[in-house]
Amino acid sequence: MSATGTITSSEYIQHHLHHLMFNLKTMSIGNGGFWTIDLDSIFFAVLLGFIFLTLFTFAARRVTSGVPGKLQNFVEVMIEFADNQVKETFHGRSNLIAPLALTIFIWVFLMNFMDLLPVDLLPRAAGAMGIDHLRIVPTADPNMTFGLSISVFFLILFYSIKIKGVKKFTKELTLQPFNSWLMIPFNFVLETVGLLAKPISLSLRLFGNLYAGELIFILIALLPWWGQWPLGGIWAIFHILIITLQAFIFMMLTIVYLSMAHEDH
Image 1 (cartoon, rainbow, N blue to C red):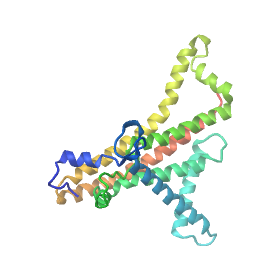
Image 2: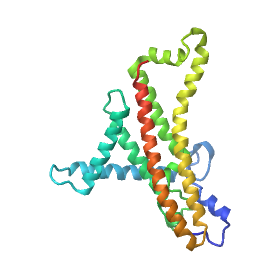
Image 3: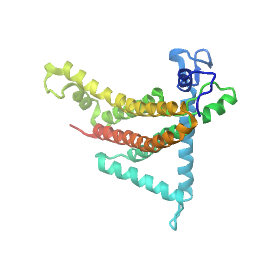
């Protein structure tokens, strides 16, 4: 839908890019700096995660060795897809990586998929209930993408220390790429930057692509109705590829990073 005549295009865009915020310090709705959380991002992320777990649990409980249903077929294809990616990329031994890869791909894809819903559909429904702002794409929120990437980062640190031990992990940070005691400060800075770049690149890549996609849909919504449908349809078809690719990239990079954490130099 296009913007109403009571607000300008700039106000319309700013309104759609504003989160439903909750101030933990004052325990009230509103922007309060560091102590503010984006309720809409958290709500939709948790909701989509619950939908994912419910569907896969339902399929697992109704699995049959006979002629499978459509849901079982879909779940089996997704499990085999994630398992094949892990087998080809992950060089360690862990029972966590394949389920983690499957969870990341499906969950990130579902959060990305929210970008394909009409721009004004849910925000207007929320407005009718007295909610002024609502953003429905969790991965267009840098707080959410950083939360995902930081979780992966902690797994990288955990497995690096678990597999290699504190001593070997410390040596990797201090004696690579130059194996000299004189180069320890330089090595440490270089390796630390490379380590921190992993979660930052994961989060910013996902956020940047979904934020740009969301913004384009908002700009299309400003057009007259006869221009929205053809342009919106074309962009939606192209965006399906983007949201799937971004979920796949996030999954694959997670597998690669965890595989590197399992390697003992």
